[in-house]
Picture 1 (cartoon, rainbow, N blue to C red):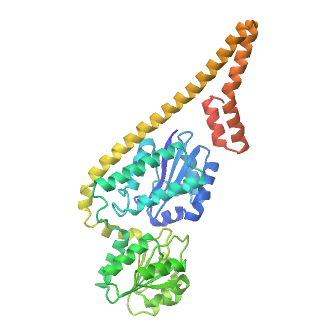
Picture 2 (picture 1 turned 30 degrees about the vertical axis):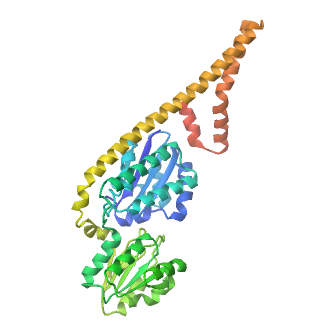
Length: 415
């Protein structure tokens, strides 16, 4: 069964396209079910959607990436031609090796960042809950997590990683020349925003407030960081009082529109610095055109993220060797899995044959005519061999599983 990794990432796709292709967590589960129903060759699927990438990992009944590309474009409201030149399709060993590099942090904007492994695990948990995992993707996940763990423990890739959270604070320090007199507003309460808060505290920020859609989470993080908790609705009236705004939520739309930024900028004498770490973006990008406003996206942080990365990149060769070995091991396991299945099918068929032959011999010893015994032998053996596939085809037909029906046609070489 072919294995495919199809998607886009920060390496070739601009943030404007990535945010349109992003799958909010609340729709990803239903999207997986729709993918398997609409894209005929897809038997198993998982969707990885982060700030850096949107990728679909799937096991197919036959090697054809077009249905997956067409489904992604249609589901996210993107013209198919917009994916030309910026999307990639990786097959089998290349697909497995790519996911291992992603999970280990080697294909991240922030080289070696640790958060991605948790995001990959969350993507697989979601696919499992949606019922779209099977033996192929389960094997891929098991091998990937093992390899990523080895990279973390056997190399220094993840030692002192330069995260986008650190880069956002470093950029603010450069702009203001120090943060002791600065007031910062953080929007969100997830892992990235918590890291931002810690870096701001370490940098000696003057004051900090945290706004989040869920007030309890804002209060909890604010208490831990000696900060003020705000509601999202407070942003419009309080924005002018902040020098730095760093936002990173999972909202599917802008939560800080241009008009709010414009109104705040008019009330200020100092520049207003905003960093949007979200994809889709939290802050209307049109706000960057306003006077006294400096708005940066996650893609703008790449230069800072890659500073002083030479030491970690020295470890990349060792990490790549571990990933290469992991991809080879995964390839061997896939072959073993297929061979084991063939042996089990053959064992079952041999058992049916032996039982039918033994029954025929008993009838011959009892004096039944040989022609009648042979006819019954052929009929009984055919019925036994066809029972399981017949039941499976009827179930697939009742559940409108066109993918399984097409697989049955291929297995039995039917037109």
